[in-house]
Length: 274
Ligand SMILES: NC(=O)c1ccc[n+]([C@@H]2O[C@H](COP(=O)([O-])OP(=O)(O)OC[C@H]3O[C@@H](n4cnc5c(N)ncnc54)[C@H](O)[C@@H]3O)[C@@H](O)[C@H]2O)c1
Image 1 (cartoon, helix red, strand yellow):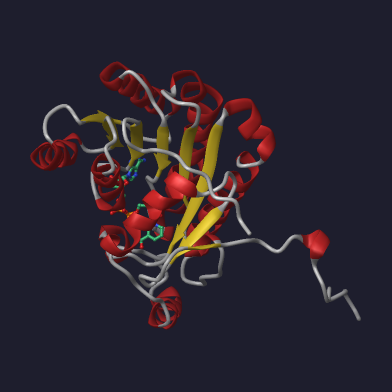
Image 2 (cartoon, rainbow, N blue to C red):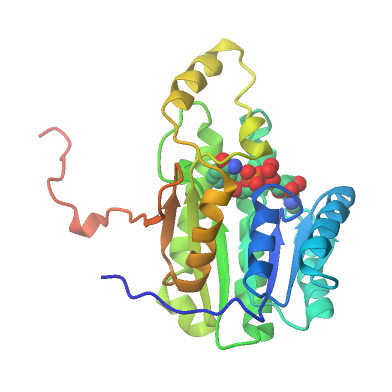
């Protein structure tokens, strides 16, 4: 039986990458809905950022959020987002590494944002800012992988690879050895298709029908959900999930822990040639 933890979001400070729209904005609002002291939306477009801030001000009042123009692939810009967060709210307790794209036609950019962006967040959040500037006994980093980070999709092999990478980073930086030295709980989520611009604009390699046929077949069996269905579980992961665990949330069903098979405990191994 998994031993759950208890982390209070109330009074804490969060930084959400890709926080100005899509799921990131839902996460930022959900943190504030749980009584967070403040959130930073770290995202690309200041205009979109200002709209998000206006929405947040209407819903939660003044001085609850700041926008920082930040491309997560740029370490210095990402570091500025941490500095601005501490300037605005005094602390940083929660990082949500959420920024990502799903577009295999620009695969190198996709790798940069989805993988390098998360690594930048881990280097800054885990190895530097959260241990030094958390307001309580523990900080949290939530990494956003995907059902594509635990399965196979022929229509988006590079996106799948980036989300497997996020999965591996979360399991490895989520080991007790890192928690002991940092007191930062590293956890991850694997959402299934969720109705946002990302899923509506998904793009495969530009090879005409070749990838389009595969996409159509794979999309048919996907179980979709709304952000409203999964966001409460995302907050529960932040509040209760043990360090180094991954949580799958798909089709509006309750989140469940996704565990990789441990090769040392594998039964019925299929040996080559036997
Ligand atoms: N929507 C889904 O079906 C789904 C499913 C599983 C995982 N995810 C993951 O959830 C995350 C958010 O997805 P979404 O659906 O909200 O997407 P979205 O496209 O609606 O929003 C993504 C946000 O990230 C920002 N962003 C993109 N590149 C950035 C960069 N370099 N630096 C900073 N910000 C950047 C965008 O400006 C945007 O605000 C992504 O990592 C995505 O892979 C989404």
